[in-house]
Length: 71
Image 1 (cartoon, one colour):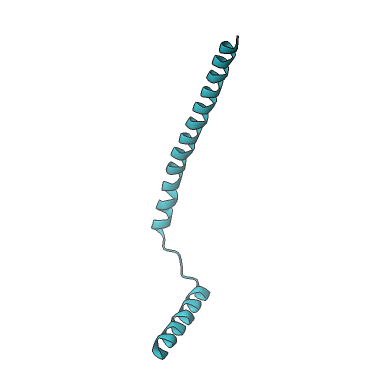
Image 2 (image 1 turned 120 degrees about the vertical axis):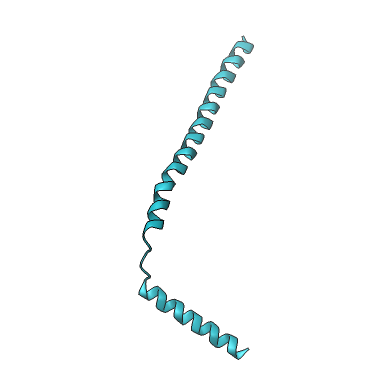
């Protein structure tokens, strides 16, 4: 009787694991397909530079230049 129960439990667990693995592979394959259109959209148009970000970048570069000239 225990062998029969073990066999049934083993079969149920095997099916559950296999369905989980298949679901994981499906999710990963859909993720790869979904990311390609986004990548195309990013390469089509260049984003406009943010003026505040450019100002901060220039300030950082000026600080670096000042430090390098001191040492």
